[in-house]
Amino acid sequence: MVKICCIGAGYVGGPTMAMIALKCHDIEVVVVDISKPRIAAWNSDELPIYEPGLDEVVKERRGKNLFFSTDVQKHVAEADIIFVSVNTPTKTRGLGAGKAADLTYWESAARMIADVSKTDKIVVEKSTVPVKTAEAIEKILTKNGHGIEFQILSNPEFLAEGTAVEDLLKPDRVLIGGRETPKGQAAIQALAAVYAHWVPKENIITTNLWSAELSKLAANAFLAQRISSINAMSALCEATGANVSEVAYAIGKDSRIGPKFLQSSVGFGGSCFQKDILNLVYICECNGLPEVAAYWKQVVDINDYQKSRFVNRVVGSMFNTISGKKIAILGFAFKKDTGDTRETPAIDVTNGLLRDRALVSVYDPQVTEEQMRRDLSQEKFAWDHPAHIQPASPASAQKVGYVMDPYQATKDAHGVCILTEWDEFKKMDWQKVYDNMVKPAFVFDGRNIINPEELRKIGFIVYSIGKPLDPFVKDVSALV
Ligand code: UDX
Ligand code: UDX
Ligand code: ADP
Image (cartoon, rainbow, N blue to C red; front, side, top):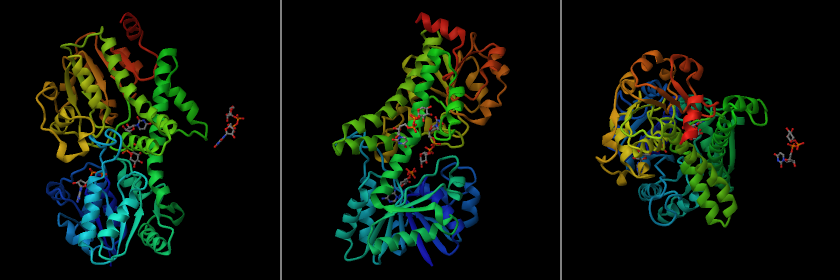
């Protein structure tokens, strides 16, 4: 029986290994992590991450060929294939701070693998890492591995949160990069054989190591670029009276452009896009390509611009002052169907509103109060550095109300900001919301999920990203 061990029981490692266990009953899969609470949660009825359909997959295979353990060394020693899916945060200090990937966790995992291995291993990079990391890892393993053969593969993950199970079941492609030597090719085939249990062969792409590593960064950069492109258009739409949804539909009909990832929003979030682009920017700079670096950096700059533009619209529409006014935030997760808040635009928007002294009340169906408090009191990039997490500071985070119900959040509010596209916000009783708000009552839709005309009929003043401006917003904005 082939034995697989995955180091890192996070958003990537957990679901990916659960799917391998589901589809490959002849393989034993053990997911290990240094975090005891995380492993305990994977072994309980309350999984540590919310992902539609994941509970069923885990329940089906857990205890059969899927195991979660903190005994990292034992399972690494026993495995034939080791996936490494540990966090790769953005560096917060030293060389490359704010851009480069911090490979501390990766390096310590690699040293541990070298220490405990007694048999040959295939080591698979699963977390996004800078191009050429495999080379560094290979050196650490071979210099410390007491003559054991290590083959390094890059097998980047393309799943998106909220649809992880679906993405793993039917991936557009599986990408495996490895050395162009006979042993490297054999390792690629061994890993391809795992995926071939359920992925059609033509969808399993094999490349050299560097192409696989770079493809992951490139894919995320291209996806994020589409969002920044449509968000840049949204600002121009508001200035000209065009409607960004109509523009997106019209351009998406061109088969060379395609309709996906053209949803204008308050900005993209998530653990990957910003981090991977900044990483790409850093790699370009280090390779003497400042023009290429500047090109990609703009994708992040436009995203930051979009978030501050949204805050400016809120403040500007409400007579240039939100001091002491209650503002409801509906949705804190970085997208719907996940409880994940990493790099969510809600953090920057909430902090922006707090800086203008608003009284903020937040509701999200999946994010805990503790998580939101931590997010609002942390420094930029701190979220992925467990050791650097600061205690929830009493400063801004404490001024926010965290409520369990959207109607409570919006009661007596002057304005409502929709920051995550949860389905329940589309189905809300907006008349009831309106009746309980201070007038004039404002809705700022950062996800374009409500029908502005319907809400205007109720009496709301509505701002939707990239849509023709409400005459009220236009008039007031002209004044300030
Ligand atoms: C373009 C648009 O495609 C068309 O829809 C619009 O109406 C007019 O402008 P055109 O300029 O005729 O059409 O040619 P197109 O095929 O788009 O190519 C434009 C340039 O891009 C060419 O120099 C082409 O060589 C180059 N190109 C195109 C690339 O370098 N790489 C590509 O992948 C595609
Ligand atoms: C992304 C990639 O899609 C995935 O392939 C990669 O493996 C990890 O990074 P994820 O971050 O989970 O996945 O979510 P994604 O659906 O890509 O959304 C990222 C952000 O972009 C979200 O904040 C989302 O709301 C936003 N978004 C997405 C838009 O604003 N508009 C769109 O049209 C699409
Ligand atoms: P991702 O979104 O890439 O899956 P996460 O941050 O959700 O990232 O998960 C990474 C996991 O890796 C965390 O649970 C962390 O505790 C774990 N981890 C980090 N370093 C090690 C290590 N050396 N050994 C075992 N687990 C580790």
